[in-house]
Length: 309
Ligand SMILES: [Zn+2]
Image (cartoon, rainbow, N blue to C red; front, side, top):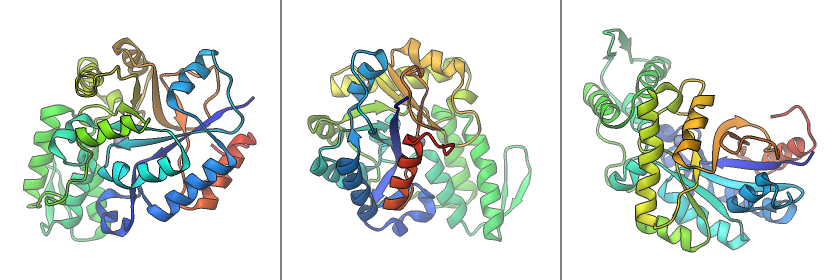
């Protein structure tokens, strides 16, 4: 049975090492990304998200070797670097943005918190349960960072922002990249729409929705949709569940909430090909490797129906 591969990208930079420490492993180099898009354009069948809706509805047939390109978070490099490459190859993409980050220009909290733990000169961090975490060695910093993530991932909105700021203060850390706008602006999102790409929501503040109270999760789903609709003057139909930390990141309850709020599709970080009978509000994706041949290999295995997922 044929399927479609939804690829999950985050950031594309000429020099990934410039932000690699704080961003973690989510940056593709421009040259690898361009090589991967060339492969998709020549050897696969890129389809648009609106076509996927019709394919899942059964109104359109699924082309062989169908691929869709998605980006999570809304980094400025998506517009500045990735979009020109996509446009050159005629590949439509979906960009899921963290809506609060559009106004502030600040990256989602995991990047800010990772930066704080990796750059601090403080030797001990005390968490909210008064547990003390040593920070002298790199491994210790990463352990403390993971503990802070487990705390922040359950929080949303103002409480989350206050917690992140408190951690930055505790660690005496300067804000990450204060002189550089790392996130897309409204103007850039408008321009992406004019270029034929899709803009979707990735919540307001990038929490793990499955670990929030239902009312908070609904607020993240609904208000982010409303704000995007007001600014872009169109219905926002597509959503991506953040998975900053903690499992699961999407449950039957979160899928039902996203449907109730009015989304038509939603993507997860679960791996695999999309099949026709899949729930459109819990679609799996495929992680593009950091090599051109690696992506081709993953796609070939996926389309061949191997156990790779
Ligand atoms: Zn994300």
